[in-house]
Length: 542
Image (cartoon, rainbow, N blue to C red; front, top):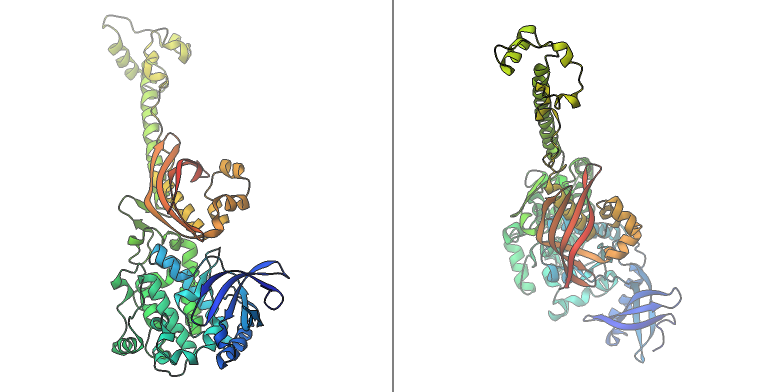
């Protein structure tokens, strides 16, 4: 088969829809992978074909990191006939529907990040007068870094009128359509916000807010809002739930715009959103929204609570807190455990000083030296010698050194004077739950494809052994991560100056999933637990 447009070679089919087929291709000019969407030949000479070409070129004008970039559009020979095609950026990680079907509903931390990115892409398109009209989980792709990208702008607009020609053309999309779309009224940017709200609802619950055919869903929409996501088991905060329901408002004027939605979902300000009293956020005022985001950013920098928000899905039924309780262990973040440890160390030091003072005081009294009064010395000597003996001259007793006093049999030569040759082992320098948290946080950062951040949890010895952040990312295949979940939460035991943390974690990649079981050995560096080596590890494909 000749390259489409003389430039794009089709390698294999990777998807198919009612109107088009999608191929993995190669741009022969720039030598890079591309996705090529080809309009099925039956529509080549119709209005749909003309609008497909026009809207493909319109979509090519969009340039945003959360929108699949369109490189080219045109016509070429395909299977012996003239066909319209659109050439796009190739996104290897699959779509949101596949991610949820494989791993289940997403927790609040991941969902807020994903929703903020999609809303940012929508805002970029809306500012340029482009309405997507077909936001659904299948049209949210995930790249190798775990970032979402919207696709199908051109096709969705081109087929907008055709969607109402038959019920079958709406299958798989109607559940995410706004009331005005289903009533064949004007479709605006607010319609995209409604659809994004339905997608967030789906990702949080595992199913869309309403079910049925177009007429059934319109009736349900008219009857009122859907069942709140948290009532269906969604692991999100109350404010997040309220925001999703705002997006699903029946009237477009009651929905936030994409810019406001992005500001409230943006991870740096998400702490503010999920920790405010249930229900209320600034609606409509961009200045108020920006103020909330700035306040949230300041709090996030202090508490970093969103870093702990992933955890077990069953523990994310409400706003994240400084303490996350799980069935096997309580993890604590912040300065409280360090303050407790410091207090314990101070108390221990006081006890040791008191004990040493008592021992030295007794020894000093036994030799007749020090600051004891003559009466005290006389009483001590009387207790140590028969009553009829003379009181010895204290002067000679001051001359022998401490190491000779025990040999001469003097009272200062008691075993209490010399240090204990076998002291009791000192307690660990840091509590073990800090090591558990370090293992959890390292995998959490890896799940967001953050190689540099996860690298910071490794010991200096292990970093030197690996070599660099890039080698660490390649070794762990970090940039293909999409999700992680602990099957067995990290549990630590102390062995000398080290902590051994056993764990079992499921790691999802763009290429598949695996379960890793093993034990991380942690050491203390710079007052923190660091991961030093992994032992007894096994990897099981899922």
